[in-house]
Image: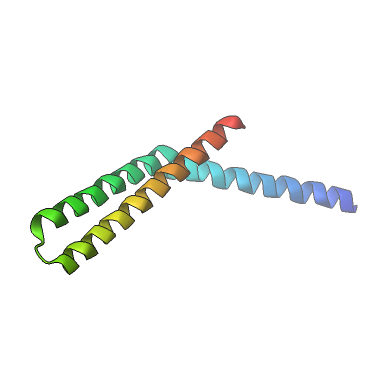
Length: 93
């Protein structure tokens, strides 16, 4: 087998593996589910911050929960943003 034939068969096999991984990820998890999870994390982070202000009296505990809520919101925003980028990149192809 020539080197060019071997490259062609390896390239086709790797392309098929990449296509399978992409379609499996889309079928199993879906980008819409990622967006939904991101927005739910945003909502959960807001709920953590809001409940910390209502229920906690001490400043250190309140500050810790506010920081935790903001971190959860940032994670949710990043997840929703990544899902949107992946979905729009898939539309271009």
